Length: 230
Image 1 (cartoon, rainbow, N blue to C red):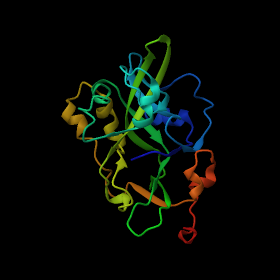
Image 2 (tube, rainbow, N blue to C red; image 1 turned 90 degrees about the vertical axis):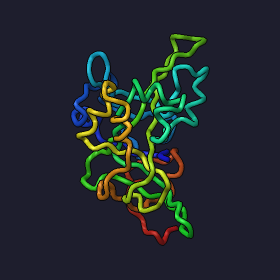
Image 3 (cartoon, rainbow, N blue to C red; image 1 turned 180 degrees about the vertical axis):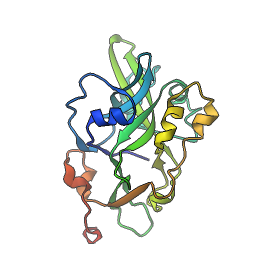
Image 4 (cartoon, one colour; image 1 turned 180 degrees about the horizontal axis):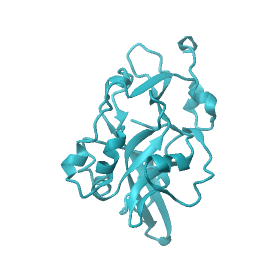
């Protein structure tokens, strides 16, 4: 799964990277080193006016949902079932997005190891481009109330996970972004992009257990710590 990320690269730079326009109000977005579900991420997607990078709340709320509480369990979508599961199939077919982050956290689940948090980021220092889905939800009882939400797609782990966990987020190569966002492409072609990152894409290190609470934030959370602390 993927349930905690860092996002501190300025939105304007992310927009340039993704060849997207920047939605209003993002110029002064406050960076965070500890974003969890139900908080806001950024997502790039195709709109009638072209590709746009906008704020999306993490936890998908399908258009047919009666209330937004379903988001609590839809912050991740499995690549193996995303095209067919009722909660995600419409978004997969019509509303893919790319979610840029600077890194993500995963806790060590290896047998006999202390459950220490690890921070994963690209070895080349560039932002990570995650495959995602988005929805615009309107409250059935109050149509003027709406939410823009998203989910991060996960897949089976690649070698860079070092067997820490049995899932990892789908990391898109920059040259695959256009194909992922183009819903005119065959579904099988887009689904084929939902695979583990090639070896050497990501690196990781142990970080402080303080990241376990979203009340803690700051660049110190991604600094390496000694494994003797766990």
